[in-house]
Image (tube, rainbow, N blue to C red):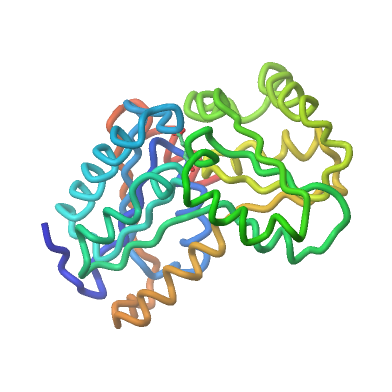
Length: 258
Ligand code: DGL
């Protein structure tokens, strides 16, 4: 289905669940006059432990849903779906700006601090060739340690953003990688910024925690400008949230308003 490239149409975001809301939240700060439409596929979350083909199929379904609703541009607010499907989606919808997200390794390198850079992400993101390409660009410069975090998305999907059980899960993950020598942590999954405080309290405030949402928001702005479809209204835009699991919609509105 074709998008109607009109300034007043919404920007469509999707993710395997509620994670992409962290990216949409940052984008709303940068572009408050845009209209937004979000699709979370919580019924099928997590994506990070599925096959690439499954994630591709689900991603195409999400894009179709957003285009039916009139999206003028699509943000794949999911590192996993970006790794698995961005190339195919761009080929399939060549006339619509498609913006993906990948682990924000560059800003971590640019901090130029001593110590390891830890990348927390889903197993699929870390196994895909897109990530291997990203690593090969920087691995000479720094010690970069991928840390697959299967199981973490489930906490956030069920609205658990703090507490003992989560802290135990995170401590075990991080201890397994001797985080004492870590200079920064890249959150390579859009769910993880929602548990940033818990991660920070485990690793301490010397460690920088970086995510890719601002970079993605800026890239979206650049693409909207380039296509002459930035919304020029003066008032605040609308936000509509959909989810394949209807009971998650309420949590989604909470997360966007955190
Ligand atoms: N928010 C998705 C990401 O950025 C989570 C993936 C999942 O569902 O496993 O990778």
